Image 1 (spheres, protein in one colour):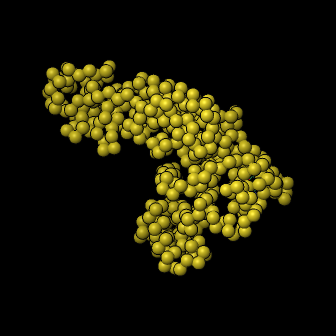
Image 2 (cartoon, rainbow, N blue to C red):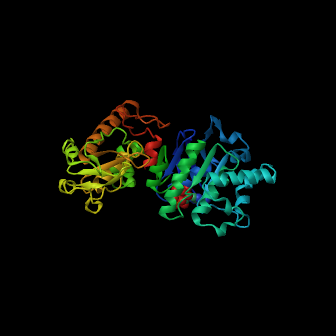
Image 3 (cartoon, rainbow, N blue to C red):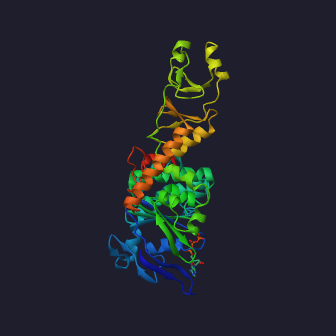
Length: 401
Ligand SMILES: Nc1ncnc2c1ncn2[C@@H]1O[C@H](COP(=O)(O)OP(=O)(O)OP(=O)(O)O)[C@@H](O)[C@H]1O
C-alpha cells in the first residue's frame, strides 16, 4: 500500500496516506480502536472500496490494472459471523466459489469436504444448515469457504469477534496451524491487541483518522512502542507478554533434584540438588509425582499424599520462557518442572535461573534488534545463544503464545 487515502463522499477521511509493505506468506494484522479505518483498508485491498489517492500494488502490479472480478477471486474474504448462505448446506456453502469458477458439483463438493477436515469440522456436519451449527463452527465454515478456490490471499475482517474466548482461542490456534500448512498471505483485522500479537507476523497499529501509528513484528511492538498511544493500546504486562517470544530451549535444567520414587536414602544423599529446596519425585516412567521434603523421603516408601503438587509443567524447547516462568511462579517450591512431549521429566529449574535466562534473552534481542531493525519477513532478531529472540517467530514461540 503506497500512500493510500480513502475519503468517503461525506468528507470523512477513513484512511490517511497509509503505506504498508505486506509480506507474502505471512499474517499481517491491522489493529486499532473502533473507527480507525481497519475495515476500509481491508476492503481497499480487494477493491470493495476504491482508494481516493495512492496505489495498492500486488506483486508489483497496480491492483486497478486487474479486472475487479479476477482480483477478488484471488482473495478469500472472511467476515464476522461468517456471513454464510442460510439456505445452503455447509458443504454447498464451502463449494460456492469453486462452483462459480465452473467446477462440476461433485468435484466442488469433494473439495469442500477436504476443507472441512482441514479446518477441523466433522464430516457429519456437511449436510446441515448454518443455523444448526455453533458460532465457532460457523466461523470455521467461513474460513473453509474462503479457502475453497485456494486463493493466495486471505482477507479476514474480525472473523473471530463474535465467539466466546475459549472458542476464539481454538479458532486462532487453528488458523496458525492452517497457515503453517498453507502459507497464505493473510491480512487480518481485529480490535483485540492480544489477538494481533498472537497471530501477526507483522502488526500495523492504526490510530483514529486512519493514520499508521506503528508497523512492526509483535515482539518489537511490545518492547518498543512507538509512542504513548501505542503503549496505551498495548495495555498492561508488556514485559511479561513479550516473554512469549523467547523459547525455553536455552534454560539450564537440573536433573540432580529429580529422584525416582524407589530411590534409596544413600542414592538421595549422594545427589547434588543444586540448591533446590525439595526433591522432585517421579514414577517408574519418569513422570512427575510431586515435591518431597527430606522428612518425606526419609520415612521409607513415598506416600504420594504427602508430596507437594508439582503444578503445571512446561515442555522445554516447545514452550516459551513465559510459560516456564508461569510454572515456577505457580509452583509451591518456586521451581518449574520441565517435561518432554510424552510428559517425562527432563529437569527442574529455579525462578532465579529463569530470571537469568530472561535477562540473557533480552540482551540478545536488544542486540539483534539494534543491528538489524524490524524485518518485515519476521526473520530478524534470532538469538545468538540458543534462545529464540524476538522476531524469530518460530513455531515454538508461536505455539507457546
Ligand atoms: N460508507 C461510508 N461513508 C462515510 N463514512 C464511512 C463509511 N464507511 C466507514 N466510514 C467511516 O470511516 C471511518 C473508518 O471506518 P472503518 O469501518 O474502516 O473503521 P474500523 O476501524 O474498521 O472500525 P470498527 O473497528 O468499528 O469496525 C469511520 O469514521 C467510519 O464512520
